Structure formats: structure tokens, C-alpha cells
Amino acid sequence: MITSNSYQPKEFNLSGLNGISDKTLEVHFKLYQGYVKETNNLTEKIAKFLEDGKVDQDEMPAYSELSRRLGFEYNGMVLHEYYFGNMKRDGSVDPDKQSNFTQAAEASFGSYDIWKADFVGIGKMRGVGWAMCYQNPANGRLSNHWITLHETGNVSGFTPVLVMDVWEHAFLLDYMPAERPKYIESFFSNIDWNAVEQRLRAEGSSRPATI
Ligand SMILES: [Fe+2]
Image (cartoon, rainbow, N blue to C red; front, side, top):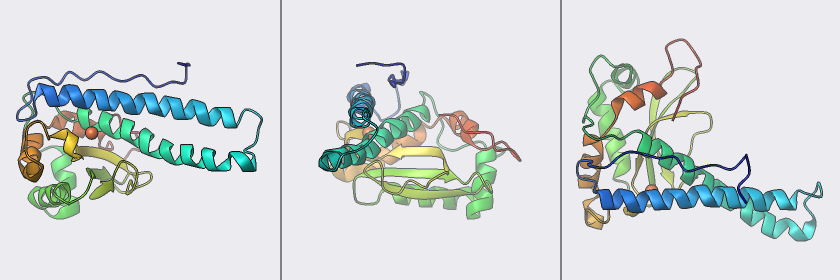
């Protein structure tokens, strides 16, 4: 049942990327739409348990399982929106040297190259998940993190500014499983640094980031 609270899948115009085929994107958009659907489904099912104002003891196992799954599906939905939202056709490998991102990377890591070595290194880690660059809204600092699946490792309250999906479904039609580094290289050639820039905190403000 679609209600006014239901999420709708967003549209991303991403055909013609460099090194990430339209077929991969087509499959990936379908997976993303599945996360949106399941987020809505689980939210609705959990609401049913709450209709009588309480969670009965005999409902607890099913309620717990659905609530745990909600973290997986919800983060799956949101992370894909960040990921697709930070790529574009004719993107650029590196941000402008004068950009707020470059300056934040230099302030946080010493140089953009060290920031990148860390982010790429995280992307190459074995396992199923995501490489994330966050900004701490309290002090503007950038830090890179690994997320297992979609939900383990998210830093509460931090703002995702660059998000890279390294699940194999993100590249398996274009590369062999062991070729994740090539996919990461392709990802970098498609980055929409303007989108990244928009997510950064405006200097001196706590303006919320946009996806
Ligand atoms: Fe994905």
C-alpha cells in the first residue's frame, strides 16, 4: 500500500558513464528500487504491530527481525541515492584545487592525495559494503569509513559527502571480481564534484546537506 509517507524511487540520468556500463546501471537502479520498496513494506509491517499501541511478547521475535531488516533496507535506499547522486556523465577525476572539498581534504589529511589514498584504500578492502567520505558537521573535518553491508559502520550525525558502492553488483558486468581497483578508477572518472561540494557544510553554518 502506497501512503503519503511512502518513499518513491528517485530518477538518475546517468547513461554514458566512463567504464560503468548502462547495463550495470540499469541492473543497479532495479536493485535500488527494491530497497525503496522494502523500506516501505517493512515500515508498513512494523506499523501494524504498533496499531494496538504496544508490542506483545509473542510479537517480539517477528517485530525484532523486521526492525533489524529496516536498518539494512533503509540504509540501502539512502546510500544508493548518495552514490548515484555523486556521479555524472563527463565527471572529473579530481576536484578543483580551489574547491571547498580540496581545502577540507588538505585540512583533514594534509593533502588531497593522502585523502584519496585513504578513500581508495577503503574501497579496496575485502568484504561487501561501501567506502564513505563523511564530514563532521561540528568541525568541518573529513574522514573516510568502511560500511559493512549498508548499515554497519555509518557514523551517526556525520554528513556523507562522497559515497562509493563497492558491492560486486556495482561492477560485475563490467569487471572481474578481482578487478575492483579498475572499477574504483572508473568511479573516480565519473564523480560529480559539484554535487560533492553542495553536500559540504557551508563555512560557519550548520546547513543540512542535500543528497
Ligand atoms: Fe549497490
